[in-house]
Length: 364
Image 1: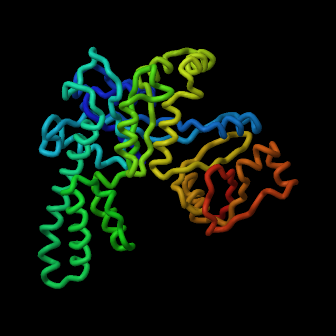
Image 2 (image 1 turned 45 degrees about the horizontal axis):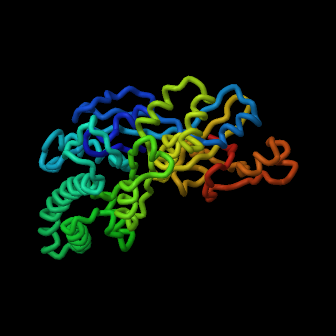
Image 3 (image 1 turned 45 degrees about the vertical axis):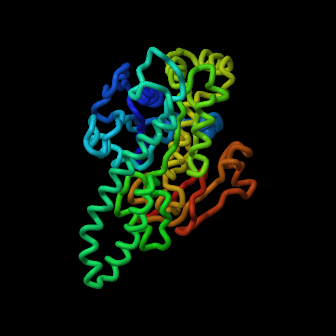
């Protein structure tokens, strides 16, 4: 599962990517400096794993990760191949969620591709390009489906009606995610269409250092614009985050954050939000050899979760021994949790909860 960073050129995408992944995507003051998409495998900050490490004292610790893709900047006309349009749109299509970076700071030294700072216009530019690409996809599909629908093919008629609804929304400059599938058939079709504007989106307002804690008027405009989208807005001073990552010690970083009025780096907030955006959650295994966070999809059953460790665990699943994270943190050890009667045995239908500490019994 991958989250792609998108935005116009020079809004801070590559600098943000570098902060998140410590990879070194080229970051320069001119458009199209990121031509190949860069992929960073990023640790998901989670205070729970620190607590488990403190209690269990394992030989090693493995955190959950999320894949972040740095995609080069889109420009007007990308849907028609302007700039490096087709390539960028293909890269976005391969991602499961979108992190949309908007420039919300004034700086005469950093060129804006459209000549002035206006995050509302910038958002609309990107939205329109993605919607136009989806409209092209929908119309091509309709050409094929219309012929079958005219012959009385029921499946084709259902698909045509759904495509017509999506087309109408796109023509009104609305994203495909605003069209809600009415039944299981439409849900399956929506997944099959692979439209870019159905992907969940998270907005990152890139602000100056003074606005890192409270935001500014540009951020207020963005929040007002997206209030009906059911999308999260994160405020981040990307340049400042880059400075924080250069500091050597944890203490220095904390002092820097305190001076800004922040409890933790904004990048940590963003990584967790991206993880959630991808509908992912964590369960833990905790032993003296290793404390590890495992990534699963929200709603996965115990056998599915076991399969993330090894396919044999899923195939031969017998049961799962489960401890809630809060109980482990409170009692301090597996032995004490058992004494308190807080260890549960769960079967194949158990839906794993975020933070569960699990041990699987299996037989192959």
